[in-house]
Image 1 (cartoon, each protein chain N blue to C red):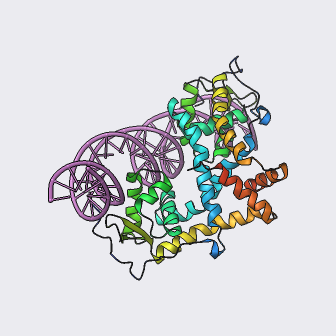
Image 2 (cartoon, chains in turn yellow, orange, green, red; image 1 turned 30 degrees about the horizontal axis):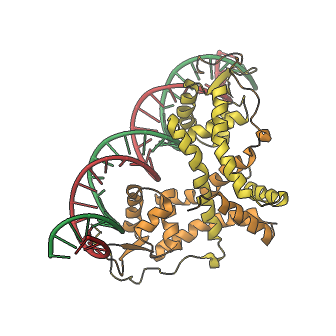
Image 3 (cartoon, rainbow over the protein chains, first blue to last red; image 1 turned 90 degrees about the vertical axis):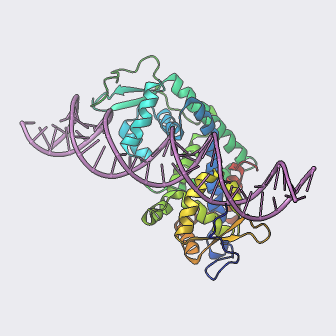
Length: 160
Length: 160
DNA sequence: CAAATTATGTCAACAAGGCTGACATATTTG
DNA sequence: CAAATATGTCAGCCTTGTTGACATAATTTG
């Protein structure tokens, strides 16, 4: 049932020319970033959906494995989400044995986060296809070129 | 109320060593992609939230501006989402005058999508901060290097 | 031409993962 | 002791994805 609001002919306020890199805006890179990230996350997403976890769990597992012993506050700073959002997924990861909490050694209010063996294994399993994708994309690019790519990606991040 | 399940001392199943690039996995690039994309989308997100739109609207406005006259099916192929998801945001964009539908010239079932002036302006406004960010990240990288970056990003995308 | 296929729209329900606001508790700090 | 800090939790809301089912108009096919 195509909507009855479709016109037969473009009216005066219908733009027909494509937006292209002419305007000094690099639409190609903008789009490539979108597609690259979409596919980059698709591999772990597929693995996670089997365990009933999602992308949010992936991030938490990843960063806790990268920096075991980090506090909840560290994680909130890294992810830039609210503690209520974090609490939901963190609780599930703790309850299902992927992450342990340890009382802070100096400050007993803190909950230091550590992966379990199971948590480490999951993090590695999720990283593997992403690493494969990156390796493939870097194929044929020499170390200098790879350094430029890192520099570019780093330059895209807001300075802290 | 720190949970009563926090241990005082890491037990046997607590991994304390960080996951690092040793395992042949490039965790640095994995993380940089996450941070880069997060910040890359933050600029348009901030603009959109003022108009009551979200990231999904951004994508639709972007692609319709990139290829005016594309059909709904084209858009579904590009975004790889379901038509029900698309319908929600597309309807809002049409109702608020950012996008027009025109009956397909050969196939009258089709709804060709075109931006209005307002839609084009929005797409450009959203692209501008992203373009600025890219330009900044590319600063000091010569054309050959920029080509490698494009090659890398393209290589991250699944072949169609 | 009748039947099947295609392009699109729509209703309903559900899930993930963001958000805000408010409040509670334990611990540390001044 | 009072204030600040680290964390947890309840309740509700929003966006944006999902599935399944069904409807309509137009085109294509046998």
